[in-house]
Length: 311
Image (tube, rainbow, N blue to C red; front, top):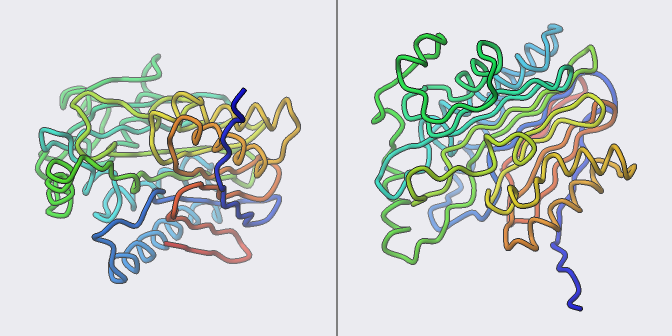
């Protein structure tokens, strides 16, 4: 019998074991041929702005939900990330975005797939969670978004020249998937509750209608107070096949693994499905964890002891 493949997983533990803590990611994968020191510095600045926005709320005693949404808002507006403005483009040259929000205190979750006009797709996911009896909406139209109070933009707002170039490269150079840029945030608030949020434009040159792991609860996003909050990034199909985010929580619950051990094992499973990427994991009790088996993962953390940003 062939031995199961294992990936080389980078693991970092950050922040305190208790009290408010915020972790974010801006995607995992490879740097790519268009990476420059200037672009990487802009990513670092945008990550820090997102941390500042989320941490300001946590420090003031706000729930984890508010913090992750605030951090996601900043990154959805930043063109460097594959979410909101600057989302990856489908094979037809359109931005088709997905998002998910889950809260650990009550296990409630909301998600959207294929939104094309929501300025902040995470707000649409939150609306599903808080204003409907449902979990996942596909392609909500402007009338539905307006009814929920979600801000909209013309579809052209989301398309940037850099993403047009990425699509052209993919369609003429062998369709190499652009594997980084998806954004995520996990937070633990002063009451010890956790929340997770993920937002993405998918993968460059994906077929219209494709849905990855990000909006699927338990695959790319998960949160439970009895284990952890998790947000994933990478080749979504592999994370779906592994039910990666929920797997991390179950490894912690039932196998007694640490957040770091559970994340590493889940990423080994992703690798066996020929995928790579990363995740951020924040236990209800314990330090936060960054884990990735790709070349890089844009990431940052903040608590009352300080912060860190890597890009």
